[in-house]
Image (cartoon, rainbow, N blue to C red; front, top):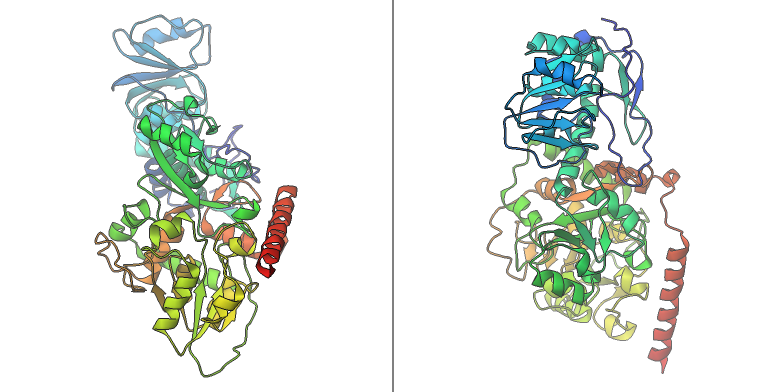
Length: 560
């Protein structure tokens, strides 16, 4: 059934104005080519209702009076006194939105202005009084709130307690039949169900950030990409360096390793809630130590995911999370995409490597930054890269050991360097420049302290032995030489691990549109050379030059 184009200026489903975002068109006015007969409108309405999307769903959520109350939004500043008698609000609690100057004064009246979340406003409303062309009428109808409308606008039929058939018809004619939707990342056409899914994805992220009042410990070069991922829907999260800018009841996202110790001590003394933020597991095409900003982060209200001494949200996902077959299929596809593209935390590449010796078992030993929090807290007492190689050699005296220094150490920015002579007295070869994905394809197994390389090896179905206690240890997928926390009792499949670690836990940013995105979008951007996301800014170039100077000075000291 073809529908004529309605005269509307803004579609019901919209992209939130994330800080710094540059999205392509999400919707365009015009006839939807698909027949309404092919659409399950009731399912679409239920999806909108359950996900609470439509309108300015990212807006603020002001304090409201106890339910029930009457919600009022009218534009005619000259007529409220004339129109309100029909509303019969005498003695009732009223919430006015963008109230006109002629609003009657009352002790039971609350006024709200600005961009608000309509679903929050409707949450305790017993009825809504609006102009009949206001989209709030449609949202109220979908939410099941009775409506009293004024005028002959496009939603006049919803006045009163509209039946399901009336709501369905209004939705068909005023939403389904007036816009075509497009993937906000690729620009390809999508159906209305997919558009709702996109909005629901953004809503969940925004809602999870609403109680974040400030952020601390974030270097200036990280803030542009981190800000959208911490945005709570109204004002951008302020980055602070002084505890005086934080209230006692505030909640602060903190990059703990870079936050000044004095600031952390003062925040902890005030019992401010601190939320741990760290790099995600698919991060960028460059090093954080080179000032390449992260394109993914993890945000954890319980603790750092790499610290086995305390629970984390990731651990809780793995211990008690329920993963549907749909989620597991998506995890499997994501895993296969990452492996096929050769993607790792900092790089991508398929460089094929040949074995120097054909008849020996090849073991990769990835080095780490020795004073990194993941090593100090998750290494089970092991912090030395040389000691790790020594332990692996004792475990596998006949194996061909390959040692790969951590890229931050190789770049000259962090501690953990081993001179070649002692290293090669235990390992057979040092491989510095080869992509970690190529090395993982080359070897038979991997031994790690707490390195993410162990997780990346699991993605490729390589046997992994852990000498420390990384987040992926203790779930039945690794050979663990250190005791995992007794909290970890669940046994997980590889795709369940991937679903928790890569789908549910991190947050990702599309470097082209600046929008929070699913991991598949970021993987495609990082593996597509035409996407142009390689870091080459002045700060990155200066930082890399600084690292080369440090390496040169260290080599001179070693020669002396």
